[in-house]
Image 1 (cartoon, rainbow, N blue to C red):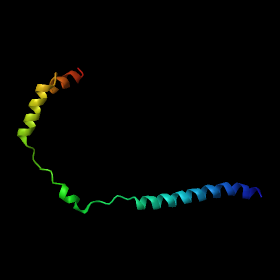
Image 2: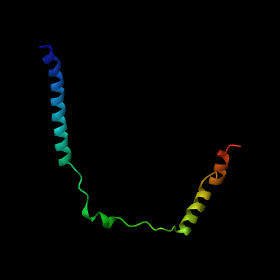
Image 3: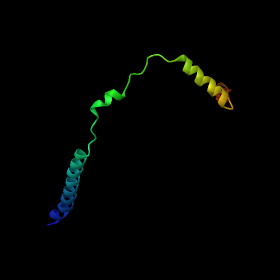
Image 4: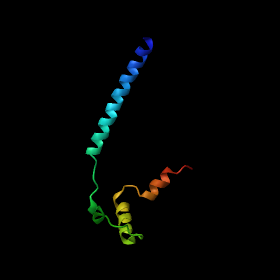
Length: 80
């Protein structure tokens, strides 16, 4: 009798876990996200070279807009 009392809670927990597992499996199969077959039309390859004019423009805007230039900031953070 004591063996049955020890096994019953384990079996109940196992049953609940099995039902939850099956339920979640069914739910996630039904709500899966399908990838759009036209997704390749929305992507374009990245250019292997940088546009240096744009990088220079970003660098100049950075120098003009920040109160401390990036090079000065990096020098402030260096340990002497």
